[in-house]
Length: 166
Image (cartoon, rainbow, N blue to C red; front, side):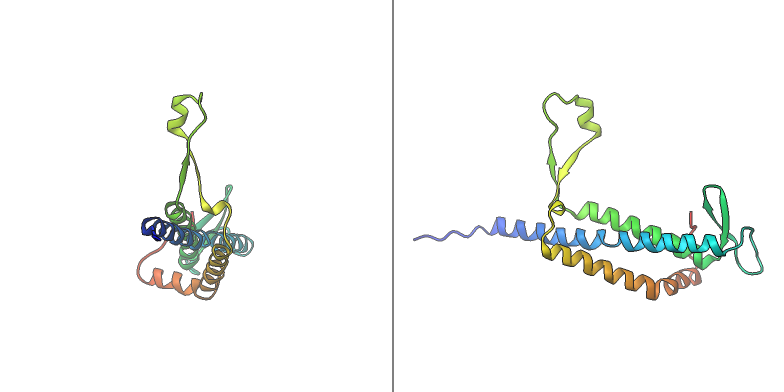
């Protein structure tokens, strides 16, 4: 009786699983950064001056469809870091998740196959451990942003990094 163990497929599945967990943890950064950014954005628009005020440090414009309020350097950097965090989470997840290309059906114009594409991922049907990683990472990121976000922005500004709130 011969037993055959295929370590190649086992390692491939393990690597795929790790990449799925990394993608879940990366994409989990998007929701807290987006929600906190929106809360701060609307908070600033309801409470900040509509003209720059150098004496109080409100110098950095925040635009909402042509209406402006002015932020301090720490507030502007904080909003900028939240946007960077969103982009980092989105693109890291996009790169990390294993993808299987879906070929277009016969008869699809050739030029269309070069400018579009679709792929199948394991994130369409997440396993319970993937959901736990996603929710745990999202909770962790939320706590870190809420507790330390202002300190991180102050640290960045103190070291000469001032981001625009766009």
